[in-house]
Length: 530
Image: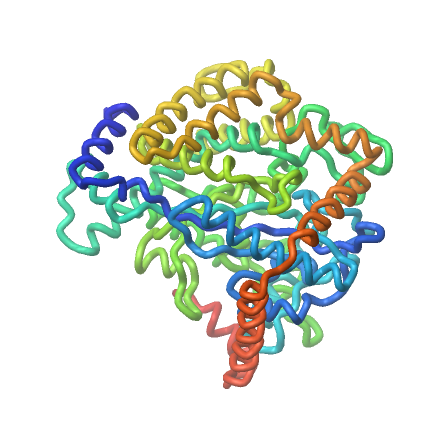
């Protein structure tokens, strides 16, 4: 069995032979979600998505997620972390200047602000095209299945892929002589699934080190779970929690609890997801699909569409117009992976830091190169249980958890993983000359030495000092917006975003004008198996 050290040694030789480190050029982009709230009281905005920011349907970098008030910022693909950060800063700068005109700001936390009830959450609107209506009805389905409040949780998604030179190395290292494009595609997909399996075995590390959602406004849940305690000002908290967002208190989906999605190969993964798309679910059948002329959901199956399946990581492929994600994967293989486990960093005005992205890069390379075995259904269940327990109790670093080898103290296990990650980080520093990889690991070491510096612990301290989650996060939101307003927009940036907004509105109008069938016909065609 090839060890991590063997793989890194071979990769170093490949870089030397290639006279460069293109094999270590990682391609990454991020998606950051954030609620729009009123500056006065921190309540969710009921105003429409700002038209001056363009069309949420067609804009490439500023859109909405579930709610009209849940903004989503999307960067392009960059060969370095700094490019991602700079683009995300530009988006935030433009958006914050726009929101101040309507006395709004961005909520900095993953868990939402006070929400009076489901009706308090406006579902996103994408215009009157069939495509826009599809997105809207899908969200109506989510509302009827799970409630709107849960859909207001925000996070950071990290999209990541390897350079072509890396795949040449990996094929050679694994003794694969790839003769044509089909073989290359299959090899790439197979090894992205290796990464995904190893990620799932270690994803608890990301909740531990970067989880920043240990508290919720009491309006988020109908009643207080026994695992939470009460803080003043309508706040419930997990005294040792890292990420309530990633616990069963966050993305709740009992219907999917028994859904075993196989991550051992792309074909069986697609088959499993497609089966869920075809399987009627009794509770959803009771809701109805189209009732009194109004759609309540796209269909009554376990999943309306692939994106409804909740996972901390996904295999991805850019889709063509009208193409389903699973069809794209089946036709052209895995192109990149999407890490979905990350909480927002509430102390960062863009929801993340460069050091966090460097750490994820190291983590993903580690997951790709370490030894691997297929996942069994039993192992998947145990991994989920461990991840859930660490989300609720992970700030107790002396607590023991089950990692498949008997109970182990969390601090010891985390340090063992960091030892391996440090080897990868040192390799990257040696090959690229970028010391920030090593610094990213050292930062996490410091958290394990002093649990008070964990993001979740810092969040709880803010809530306690401010006498509540809502008060603490609104104060932080205003503070961060003031920082953006102190950085005036330059003419070039303003002109660029104004042009993007205008073009996106034109694109939406063109899409609406091009529709040739009614929505019923469009939906029937869209839901046909691919």
